[in-house]
Length: 201
Image (cartoon, rainbow, N blue to C red; front, side, top):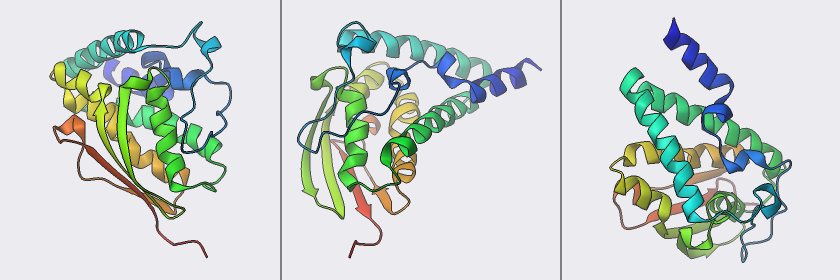
């Protein structure tokens, strides 16, 4: 059946349908520390990506997802989200070195995926940063702005925000993400809190 063929293909090769700059790096970047987020090498793109380029990419991806949802229902969005998370989890496991880093490293990875395009895409306030806990409030995210403007925050949440929990688990089973608010869902901030389950001794 065509539907089965589509679903299997999406699970096996999500990069073909949902290309993303995250997948282009030949190896994970060196972590720069909490005071400076890393930037993808501009040589990968012939120059640093900006919001106009990223918005064009998101517009194309959103059009594909909306058509798939119309044809196959909400299950298509769920499968796309799981497929993308699978790619991210594999990448993070390789990058995380068995979760030996700090809780802030998980956020820095996620934030670097956003700010690699344009530093103005994300604004946040760090409330706590220690070996056991990293708490941050994100007050501006152009990804959330984009999907809200398009009237598709559910797709935005599925393809971006929903991945955060799985990414944290892939980084370390000893660190959990707690979050009750997101800009994508209409709240005033995203209240991320990455906390180590068992404090180090």
